[in-house]
Length: 464
Image (cartoon, rainbow, N blue to C red; front, side, top):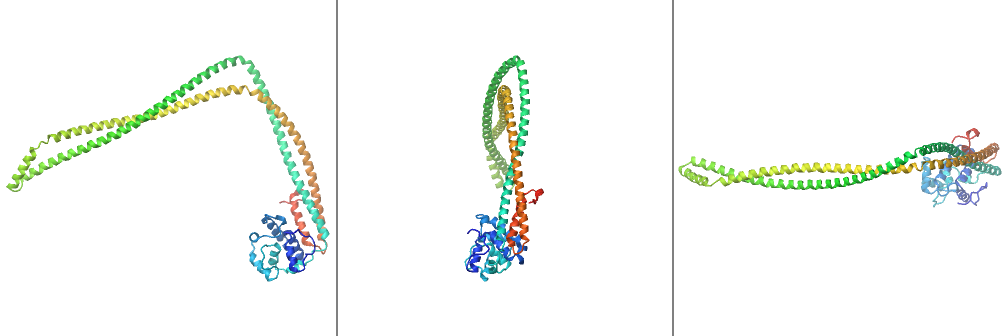
């Protein structure tokens, strides 16, 4: 974009060229020209809306900010959505083409294009509209505004910096004084402890010898505890191994018992079949014809002639074997339960032994640390007191510098407030004169209003 032109006349041989030139000026310059052109008809009532449009465009235009002249289509859609506008960019361009303001291929969206379509103004009249005969006054007001804004910004920054530095210096000084008092008290207490320690030196020597003996005993106890822990761990592993062996044996006995019970069932089945056949042949020998009874009697005699004694003996032997296997399985199951209990107890014993070993180690380490800490106390207290005294002196010096900076910042703020008041008075005087570029003056006054948000309300500032 070309540099913003502050002249009262737009360059160009035709109205179209003048509009194109206006579109290359900044968002603010487009708004000021538009307000100057239509101030008396509707511009004064719409000035705040144009202000909002310009600042929203600056917010959206991340690449150019205040120096921007146009938005792309996507940025323009965001602008219109933020103000709930119903007209689209396409509809705006259609209106502008119908009225000869743009050609066929237009990619960017200057704000003045939007305002021409929104307010349905005569754009040719606008580009040739008078911008007032007070150019020197406007430039003077703009210069006064910029000077006041710069002074306000610098004064505000210096005042904030000085106030923060003063608060920090006062807090640091208070903290340093507190640390100094604490260090002195600690030093006094350390001296008292030192005197008491000297008088008790003889007793301390004997306690040291006792402590060394206790330390040796603690080391021995620690070693014993670790040994017990290792033994408990080995016992635990053996118990778990025994438990697993008994579990396997129990499974083996259960399988053997199952086989014995199956064999016993088979013997019982054979005995039942023998008895059933005896009963059947007996019944046939007593019923039916003579021939059939005689045949049944012969078969019964042959059947009874077979010796059932081996079957009965096998049954008795098998029943005894089943009972024996059941007793063995029950014994193994009981032993397994006992082994599980022993393994669990061994685990508890190992954990207790490990905890005892850890406690013995901690006790020895604590004794060593306590002895070392007593040797350092007085030297640290003295060093802390000396550091606190130095810190307090530095804090007092920083506070003095901060108070000087605050006084200078207050003077700068008063000068900035004076410049704001002078600019305000000059603007009011110019706005009361006829034939002025009221849009430009209103815009400067509006910027001055924003600047007053950074002044104290007691000095004419306004709340943000």
